[in-house]
Amino acid sequence: MKRRTSGIILLSAELLGKSLKPEKLELQAYGLKENKVIFEKEREFPWEVDEALALFEGRISGLDLSGPVAVSLGVSESPRVREAVRARIEEKLRLAGVQNLEVEVLSAYKQGFFWLAEKILPVFRKNRPPGGKQQEDDVSRPQSKNSPFSPLHL
Image (cartoon, rainbow, N blue to C red; front, side, top):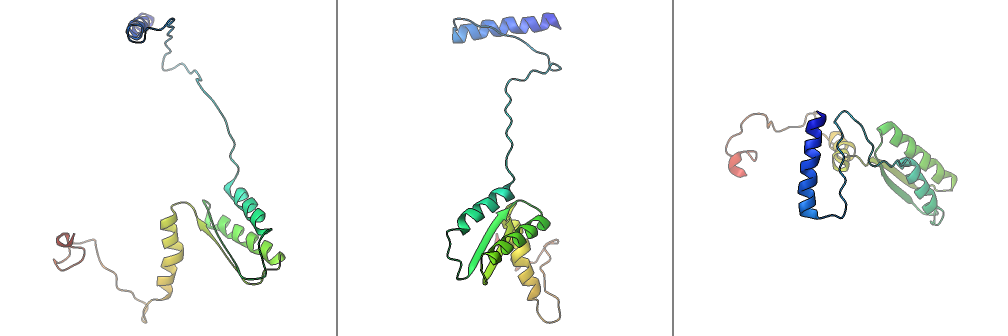
């Protein structure tokens, strides 16, 4: 294996030397089983909820809180965590004297999907026609040519 590796280094050095014409060229080969760290940088990111709450607290101090206040926030957390954040923001607003408030903490993960699932779908479910059943199109089997799901209409 050592012989094969040295051959690769010699060939690479020859090709790179001809094309790049460097003043000095030094190549080293490492096997796949050998680990060598080339670059490493660590960074610890703050939790997005902490950042959102800090932003909220920074902005609330300059607002006129005598009228209605609406807060809409998006974080990539579970419904349980989002509900806790909502309750915390409501508590801070109530302590600041706000009576008329609306706070929503939506999912920032797949925003469109969760907006439909958590905001729009419940409205449709609540407004079902009398009898409790809602007609749904069955797109799992072929439709007639007059169906909007027919390939003829695409």
